[in-house]
Amino acid sequence: MKYRAYIDESLARNLQDIVDMHWEEERKHWDELECPDKHIYHSLNNLRNFLIKLKNETPADIDEWEVISDEELWEDGEISESEVKRKIINRVLNTGDWRLQSIKENHAK
Image (cartoon, rainbow, N blue to C red; front, side, top):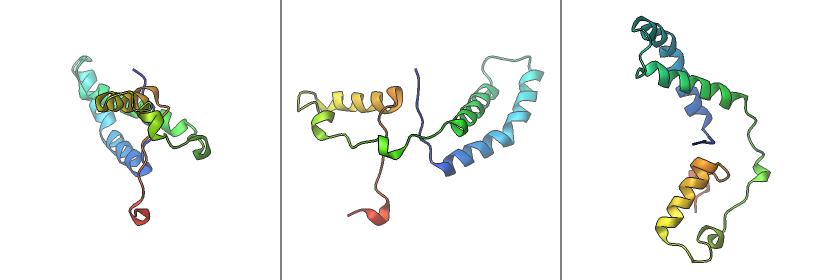
């Protein structure tokens, strides 16, 4: 399963701080335990590699994104609410061609 990520910059910094704080220590601990399959080092290493990749990717130009109409989302009323939910999850998390956005508090009506 392939995920496409859009992460707030402050969240990325927080994740990087956690990885930086624990990665080396957990790698040594993992080596001492003769490289067990289920060890927190695997998660930290995957997160570390993800953050490196994320940092090196150029974010898509905002002009390339458009609002999804209700008609497109609901397929002109032909699909159920549960199908819409599955569609959103698939397009946001799996395909990565949709993203979620929210209105900033000071711009909300």
